[in-house]
Amino acid sequence: MAQWVKDSGLCLCSSVDLIPGLAQWVKDPALPQLWLGLNSWLGNFHMPQISRHRRNHSQHILKDVIPPLEQLMVEKEGYLQKAKIADGGKKLRKNWSTSWVVLSSRKIEFYKESKQQALSNMKTGHKPENIDLCGAQIEWAKEKSSRKNVFQITTVSGNEFLLQSDIDFIILDWFHAIKNAIDRLPKDPSTPSRNLELFKIQRSSSTELLSHYDSDIKEQKPEHRKSLMFRLHHSASDTSDKNRVKSRLKKFITRRPSLKTLQEKGLIKDQIFGSHLHTVCERENSTVPRFVKQCIEAVEKRGLNVDGIYRVSGNLATIQKLRFIVNQEEKLNLDDSQWEDIHVVTGALKMFFRELPEPLFPYSFFERFVEAIKKQDNNTRIETVKSLVQKLPPPNRDTMKVLFRHLTKIVAKASKNLMSTQSLGIVFGPTLLRAENEAGNMAVHMVYQNQIVELMLSEYSKIFGLEED
Image 1 (cartoon, rainbow, N blue to C red):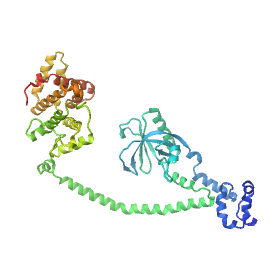
Image 2: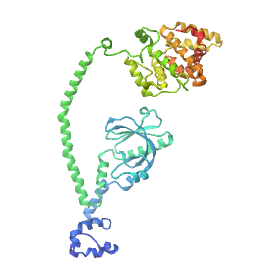
Image 3: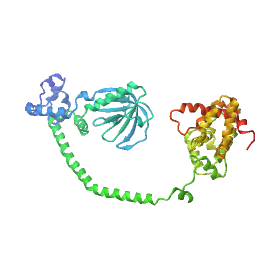
């Protein structure tokens, strides 16, 4: 037995004395059959007896391939807003979420809650989402989001993450911490993954570790050569395929029928939203678009007493659905239950006027209306605005008259719907009037836009007359 223990190369003296009951277990006749279990169990209590040359060599290799413990320690952690916008080069829909971000020397991990709570609640085998910082790039990304303080991390594998915080010093501190971590890492992305894999071979002998490291290198080389040969073999055929596709696309584009031809054949229908007012009216042989009349009729039928009418926004998805039906010239019934929310109807009407290529008050008349509202004398203001309205093209003048007559009925119910002339001026001013070039004067123009709408509402009878259409 003593000879067998000696041949194993293991020093058991201190371990046998220190661990209660171990001496009796060593003397058991079944020990040779159970040696594999003993060798594993004593992993924390002994060191393999290897030659000085092998020990020095293995220490040198281990130093190169196994990251020291301090590299795995947490450098920074806290809550940030996170959005993953690309996975392996494939663009993803941006979806912001709050994450507990943990930065170590070579990676970033994301948890839904603080790391301690997350680890205690995490299912077995589940790993948190993480970013490998080796070879990664970090940069500010103002153009990637309307939010402030956003920076982007791009990994060598093509993953892209956005991180954000509303607090300036917090996001600045995170940016510098991550950048410093990236700068400290080697630029070769294969190094950290190889180090991590070898680090997981716990309690292995140096011989096993060296053989694993060498075999791993030998296994990758033929695979790399194979992939390189595959790319070289297919590069010529890929080029010819691309040229063939380009040629077909070029022929298709040159033979593509014009928009006018498609409209004449009925393949493309003229749309209501986004078309010029006079175009819509000419198509319908009217001076007021049918859709405008339908919306006004629906609001006056069931929306005059609704709190915040025209101010409260309707569901955007439903408004877009209504817009699609109108553009497809499908039969529209605003009394249908799917349009029961009157704010959807008012939202669609505002969208129609907002999407006109030229607003209801034409660009050429904008400055003249502004000059009229600047006049000090009220009667002069009214007469000047009345004169300008009469000079408008018939579709603009008649549509304006129908709309403002409708809005005066809204004001008449202000005690119930809480929409005064000032409130409607704020809502419709920027929608109906805008300068062709608003650079630098937007705030000033907004004041005049509201005042013009308020004047035309309060003095409707003097500007448009009392006759009914």
